[in-house]
Image (cartoon, rainbow, N blue to C red; front, side):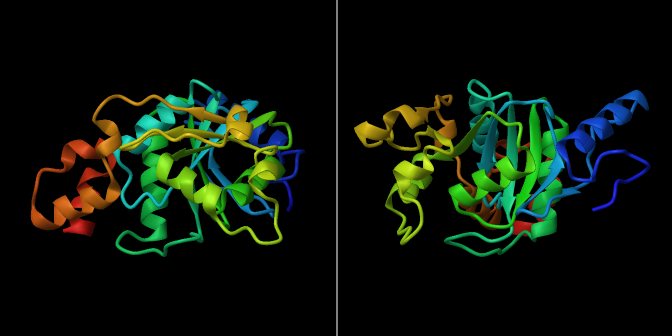
Length: 240
């Protein structure tokens, strides 16, 4: 890809991204919010901390984003310098319904712009290893990659049929898991416990789910307190 706007670095390179952020700040603008396209499986839409060396990726369907998602991101900042809210174009176990891909992406950008150290990424695939590798290719200077998830997703990760691909132990050499409980704690195999870290969430937040928000909207129960303020008006129209 050619450099944009006379930038001496290739568009999509880490140096390009940093220069664009610096130029935006010099002009008094918000940090770079347009997509930076990479050719290896990830678009970095918005960086919350472009110099971060420890980065956590929070992949989810975001249908819709909830306060539980935000709590996961905030808790992950105890381990990472930046958390990227990651929207896969393809999910390994579900498809798109209700809110469109473009709507969900817009929601994530609104949410990240309003909070420090949060960014947004789009991934071509949805498996944890695919997401981690895509980000390492996009930002070769990263030192540690974390994947943030709940215990149900962690259980799927450990049980997934990977076939001839890298097994769980091999994958956890490339990234660590940050796992939040839902209705139960998650206990990884003892030999892999050093690569799996528990997140602590405030009581009550772990019970919030996108499924329940959609149900509440459909039956006209109270729901606004369960989602970020930035998406309430849109969610009311999409899920009702």
